[in-house]
Image 1 (cartoon, rainbow, N blue to C red):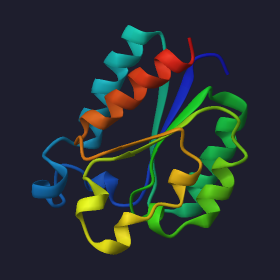
Image 2: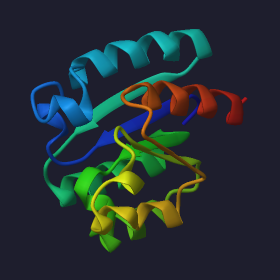
Image 3: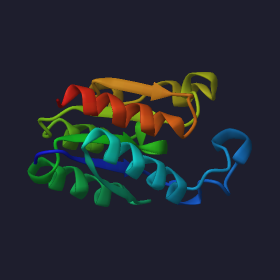
Image 4: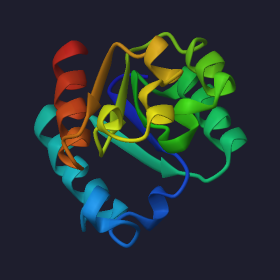
Length: 145
């Protein structure tokens, strides 16, 4: 496991930079990955960045992380508010989990105010834009020292 961090992204994040830029900004997921690669190099971590619009695929990656990763950063997107299955999968992972949301979910529609994933996460970063990924990665670098 060592220093591998899985960065998991849920539905519609493949459209980052194109979908609702007034909410999510103009950076793409590839831009986020490039920034995270730089932070990973600074902090002695490795990352594996993945995105899926399919709940089962995210669950499979969480299961894979049990064997390969020291920590998980997850932006479950809309699955935050609906997926007990992702929560159950995260509960099988023994390392730290940080939940990231690009927007501040607490300033949006009321149904977005609750996240099942938060029940498992050691930390939640919301509303810091795509910088939240870097904050989460730096935090895991400190936690895993």
